[in-house]
Image 1 (cartoon, helix red, strand yellow):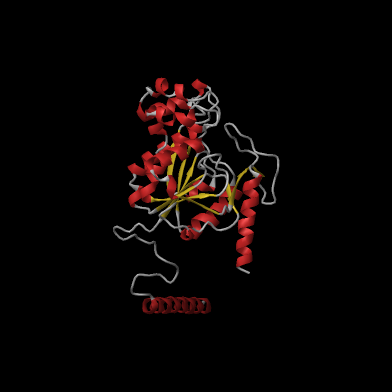
Image 2 (cartoon, helix red, strand yellow):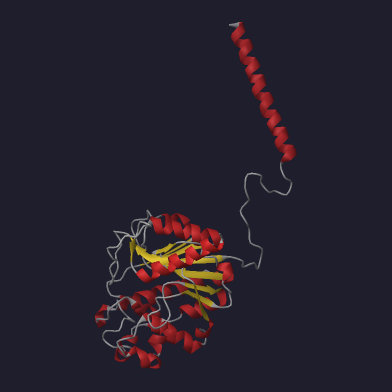
Length: 323
């Protein structure tokens, strides 16, 4: 019994000695500037500092985890960017995007997006606009009462909802650069924004459909809201856009082009070599287009072959340049 008591006391003394020694070493070596040897402390922006980027996913969540992982690695991480979601409301929040997002704004899904358009400035547009739109125009697709095809109303309403949140949260004073994009892009290599002059509006090459692509936009804080302001002026003065809206070729891309040209920012558009392609997973749903049956080696379904080929050319070229 005495032997056990002695052994126990000796063990306690050793443990106390070890703990005291570690405390002394830590006290001596711990940096006095409050930095940590175990990793950086959270960074606090200085007053007036706007050296940050916000990547905004807009629309419904599609593409799947394989695509989203490439977003994290090739866009968010490489640019030290925050993530915002401006998406359709969902009861299921199993996507990793929810965990990664700093901002979450959800939009109700409308059976008829004409009802959503009424939120902008009432219902008077319903009498004013249709006379200037060709019946098969996709500019207001989703406004079912008029039978328009496509999803233009959905695209532009999400941009309007986004602009309201940007102003409400004063985000152009917090971030100096924004990427407005979709969730169903698969990035093959880094989308390094430091290579893109911030005084310009940057779009990926290809898929412009006679105008300006609505799928991906890189823009500085001073140009963000003007770039998003498409639908309200069109609803107010549709006659200004009749030169193209009244034809079958009227589509969201052409409306963006026309609007940007009208306010003088179309000349700021430059295009970068595409490093992403639009993809789908088996469970994805879309309002008017379906994915192809072609699954590519990346493990996702392909939507546009041209995007896929261009992305591979870009990223292979970068690998060749790096040796």
